[in-house]
Length: 82
Image (tube, rainbow, N blue to C red):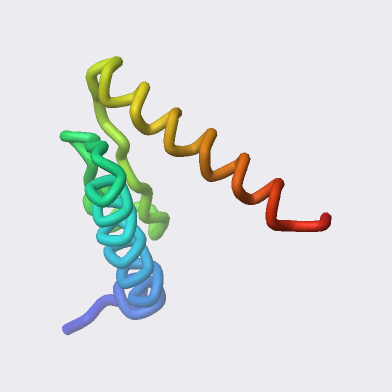
């Protein structure tokens, strides 16, 4: 039998899994990684709020992610007239 909380949070679970997959894919394409990246399924099961745990990472890995974010922001500023 499926609990009411489980039924009510089905879309949140799907969204958490999809965004995690997307994040891993984008990081991989950018040559970066977060080795402990995961959905906190237990917290979500208890609270109904599914969090993405970014975990721990080496400074070198984070430098690459920061570099990618900076380049993306620069590109966005150049291509948008906001």
